[in-house]
Length: 194
Image 1 (spheres, rainbow, N blue to C red):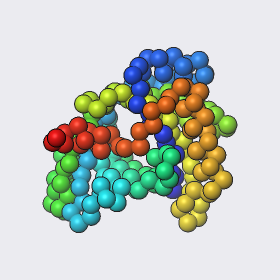
Image 2: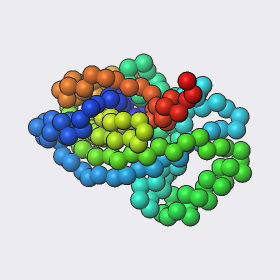
Image 3: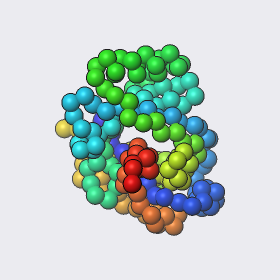
Image 4: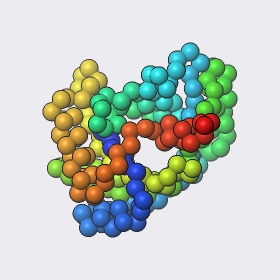
């Protein structure tokens, strides 16, 4: 089991961040379009429990992902479990139908264009996602995977090192506007009346 130690920052200019990443020696690893369909549990309020269930499509590739509650107040660290599904639109639709039959309801769809960059910091692989999220804005996510111990939790030492590494990289990139809400939460906030 792994945990994502992640910080997300709102930015005005993704190209400026890409230039800074290149100057740090990070490597551009491509661009993708991601479409995430989020679902509400029939008996549990995911907004209250800070969990998420989604079907992610990247082209014809499909994944189902569960995200657990955030573990700390400074990053978006959480347990994440993801399974690759069979490719194609039919798979996406079939899983959506299965979830609906089980009482799940579709909440929203988040679409984003993502530039992926990779770097190594303090001996750990770090991934940067430069996201342009439709209807929400531009963001940079810095993510480091932290392994869990036998009980499924990250060790305190590894967790603290990962937090420090992520925060240091954010400072090096000049990122200051931390955003702890998910893209789903941000999208729903833009759609809320009033």
